[in-house]
Length: 323
Ligand SMILES: *[C@@H]1O[C@H](CO)[C@@H](O)[C@H](O)[C@H]1NC(C)=O
Image (tube, protein in one colour):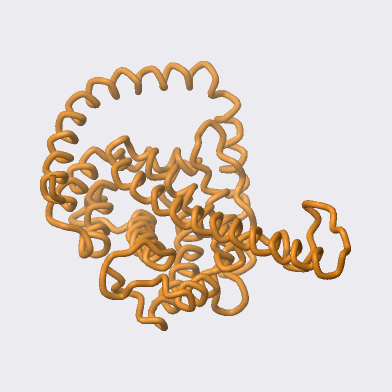
């Protein structure tokens, strides 16, 4: 089956999937509601506390941006996705003046994948794709670390034979030994190393860390745009636009540009079944649009910082259109 065939198959599958999910979800949602009634009291207390704190210090979201931006967000109990954890990883990624550390970058994606998965099983068709991409970079880093390890073992053995000294196994012999996958430490170090080794193919699709990063990078712009539009309290003709519409519009101007017609259609079907605004408030443990906006804007600023640096790094090396 060609790409189109597979995408067509995916669409048919998704349609069947939606039909069965409507049924299943209705049952499950009422189940969750019951659960919350029983065990949600503590959570409610917590949210209330956070809410009161926020109400008592309105200046927190005022002009003092930098300090407020760095203050950690509390845990929001009862769910997988934690906006506080996402923010922590995003803020840990930028390093020196222009680089991005890959470990927190990928950890941010782990959290964003949980975010996407909480939007319904249909968005999972995109989040699975993204998860596969994060695995590629992690595997490359792992492989590189193993290769480095082998090279060092060989060096160590050679030294042993030459000097006659015996080095106990597993003990680091170089200052660099034990540093896992140095080439895949940051965006810049990865680009540099992969270019040096001729791993980046500018003419045809070939798996590389840089190509994979570009795919993640494009998806990050979509989420950045979606979250920032979700934070805005704009309404058209007196009606606040639904997350579903916002997500679709953000998708159209970003990721869709890089997707085939079939994938675009599948994605737009997936966005139709997206939860309402109240769901997103619960997801970040707030009650109002204003509070949600404060949190979402912090996340958006953190994403922007990471996105802008990655964009510049990829652009510098002519990697924005890697096939
Ligand atoms: C990122 O770049 C955009 C567009 O160039 C700019 O508007 C925004 O302020 C930048 N954000 C950060 C956090 O650097």
